[in-house]
Length: 104
Image 1 (cartoon, rainbow, N blue to C red):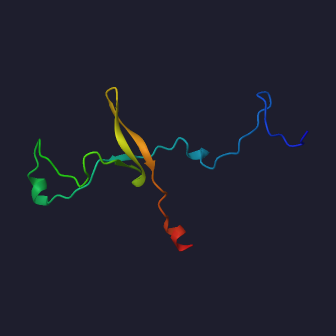
Image 2 (cartoon, rainbow, N blue to C red):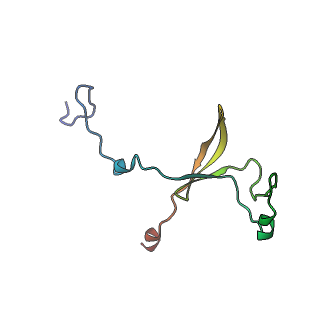
Image 3 (cartoon, rainbow, N blue to C red):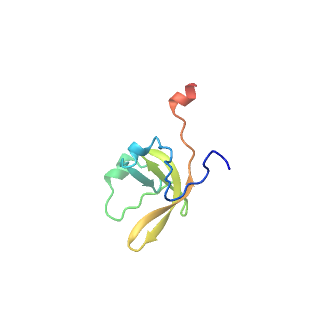
């Protein structure tokens, strides 16, 4: 029998290592789902009215960009659940390089 414990029973709880993110679990962050981008002249902006159409650079069916705190986090697709619009994450994007990492 080994001196180290590899399994625990329900009567013998083992503490999981504390995550450094525990203090942030309830932090609320702004979430943006970007449908597309484009450009428009000021002249065109001044003539906008109801039912005006603005062209975007993305094609129909392209994935949406999910941003948290204006930082790209994932790509997603639109999902309708009952009467609510939601997104399904299809890809988690790589973490953006911070300036401090680039200097190392």
